[in-house]
Length: 175
Length: 308
Image 1 (cartoon, one colour):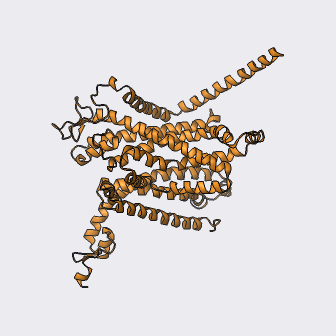
Image 2: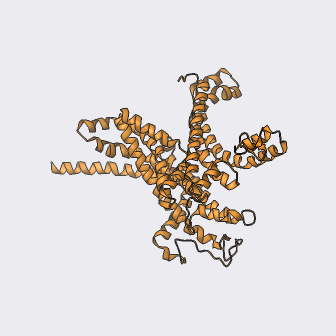
Image 3: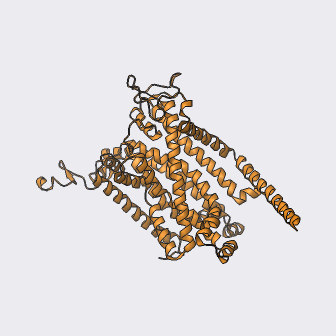
């Protein structure tokens, strides 16, 4: 490829191509295992911090719905029939208890995207959140609009995927 | 005849009064049987009195500048906790104990200023939507859903750009995203209450819609909303501090817990207390308010009431 032709393009810089601009995925595409491993190591702490907050909310929600489901008649019936407890929980109760959790998952993702803004700032991770923070501090209107729009798109896509999963899990639902 | 009437009035009063006292005593009994909730209430009261004293009687405390941080540029590097500085100091020589006491005032009142207008807006929208039904309900609830799904930190940043990054614009931004939950609560309660006979009776006797909505339906939806307010105070405080931490408020020397945390941020390796202590006070408030809210939820829960 002629380097002068592609020099201004963001996915081709200093003779190295950046297909996605996500360090981990770019390193995997170039099969540079050292860089990929390092990028993965730097992802662990921020993602763990983000996940912990959502985890607490999910555990609480799941517990509430699971307790409700385990009180219902069909669970009693299954137990009376002599179905082992493992099967009762995993096959009978879990899927039914998951439905309200999935409904609320979309809002949890919204919270996650909010958390990204702070956590990337704390861990100095060069992501969308960091970029949005910089745009805010520099009063960069394009950056703020683009970041907000991108977060909106991520949210819309997530809720679409969740709706599809919802229909898959609960066969009563038809769109 | 007159005597009889007055006697009847007396008996009516006697019937109502002990009942109300019993209700109140039962509520207190339920609340105080929950040890965690009582601990939460005690911590919350500490924050409340701190905010109250600094707001209205700042001369009681030995602060020269109760509404701003006092940096000491002669000794800017954070010092570890000692007798002179019980919590240590943070970046420009700010004493952390004094700074935290000053910061709680701003955070506490700001979270109240956000939650209460948010709850009022949400209640009004939820009740109007559900009471009238039809397309008004459809439109208002769809707007609620849209606002509910926006990440509030991102929206606050966008509003901060439009209105300028000040305390007031932060307040407006957070009020704008905080009402949908209350609209949903009001909706669920109104849906039940709307069908009850006393509403029908009020309508039959010619009471105006406005009066039915805000005199008969509103008091019924207050208890769950009150619980949600007490739970939300902690979340709001976390949000305010997060926004201040990433630099939403450009004003320096503003006593705010999130801003204090960001002061110590560069010294996290060498002086961890500069970041841990303000963070601890944010988390402590959120935890206390959550425990307290759980206690209030038990109080309004009829199942918990019947146990005692």
